[in-house]
Length: 405
Figure 1 (tube, rainbow, N blue to C red):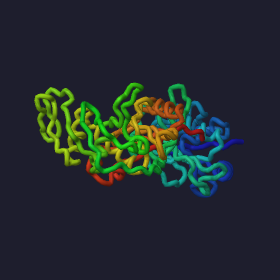
Figure 2 (figure 1 turned 45 degrees about the horizontal axis):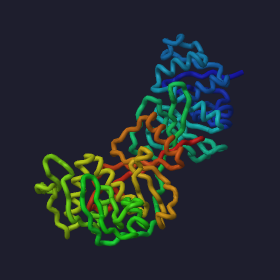
Figure 3 (figure 1 turned 180 degrees about the vertical axis):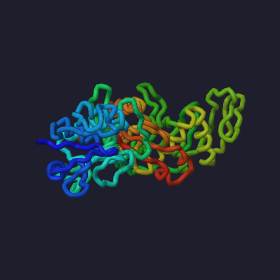
Figure 4 (figure 1 turned 180 degrees about the horizontal axis):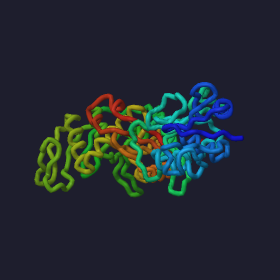
């Protein structure tokens, strides 16, 4: 004969041999003295669904569902719990799915009784290593349950497993982690580069061959009928980073067609559109390029520049990720462009208060997986930009990928 539970506050109390029957053998609930245990609502619902509990007496709190002393079966208990507990339905779906996959679980969020794992408050349930119990096992997945239409703040989500429940009750799991972005590209550019700032790029008319061939900076101007060699176009983030490192100066700058003719420091354009720059001062070059970048794309430029510089500090090579809908693609080890490996990551740069929409996150992860790359987010406010040291200290790196528990 199966036991009956009693709802007491937010927990279901089960006596008799409940400890041996449910906790010791299968990791449900937590002991509360003698052989009794307390179950969370999701645990009790799962045992009712399996037929391992005969019912749950809802008591005075359950009068809306059938009256005191009348044991509720799965259907009535589920409806009562959905009304009483926040997001009960989606939490139950994830709990039941992971149980079916063979994991011992403990609800983690107050006021649910469960294991004593040290996990963030946003985690709903912890799954232990296979074959382990809440008392003896290590946490394998700290699971945060998310509905398809909910939002997830990006800050602090690293180390969690996101279980997204869609409108048809299917579950998709994502692993949020801190990525390894350490590269081994050994090229250091020369310290005497000179370029011209045009509308939204910087052109080096006589660039050293190694700048592109070994450092993978910029893009050469080439063509079958080209009579000019050694010309490389740099993006504004590449140029701003080189100038911030003190190795790029500007020979000239043009206003790029801006109506007000203004750029860094209020420099005015002459009649021919050229702007006054100090050709011997990399700091002046950096200021001019950053100002142009802000004019082109606003505050987003500062965030992208901070991420670019941090990636270069890690000896990786960031290049535009436009074709993949990202800010950058990265190469960890570039020896020469002729022997270029596949890029390993797609990097999206977002503000520290960025909030994920699960549907958009799923699209980004699917795209990255389809081109065999890891999706990485750089959370930064852009404060580590041109001229600042310790850029990487101001960035939170986050990778997100599909997971099959």
